[in-house]
Image (cartoon, rainbow, N blue to C red; front, side):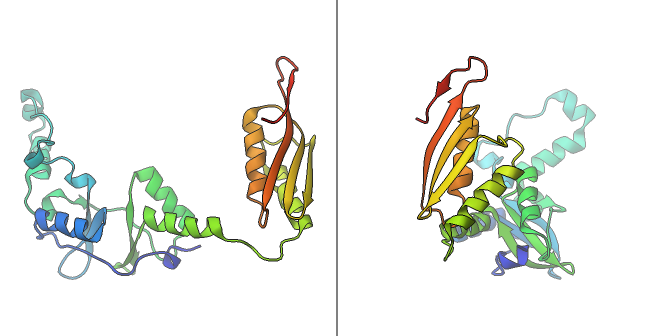
Length: 233
């Protein structure tokens, strides 16, 4: 799936000259965690987010004043911190050179970027112009739809084949000793596993089989250290 299929094209943006107070009100009014910042030509020049506004002098979250040594050695850094915590306009608090994706970016890549960079919203640029925004909320929305999808005309044989194929591809899964019975789209798991984590993972595979209605766990857990066997809870 591509970003284009999920991105929000109804863009709410601000300019560098927008007052920080107005940006905060716009975020609250639209229930947004961040806003793209566009210059007069429509070019993306930054992002202002909730995170950018966490440290502010007005609410006493600007942190401790820099010590004399840091002020002496790194005066520009101290000055930049002051701007970020006291600026009245978006240009002083926004994140410059924001990470972005394109409408052709794979959804998995966009999700990975959000996770690695700790970003909640990503601008989508096409030919240098802002085409939309994609957020973690958008990903959750598509996930919710996928989780409740119910495929039609799935046979018992297809369910069994799906589970067997997933077990075969899973490096952690035991390659033998598990028996799968499917009757009326209800799955029964039997056999031997060697950790409770394996049990849970095998059950999850069965639960994710398209069309499955119910999973019964009859797996026998054998402790490799003691050799003792424990039935399913």
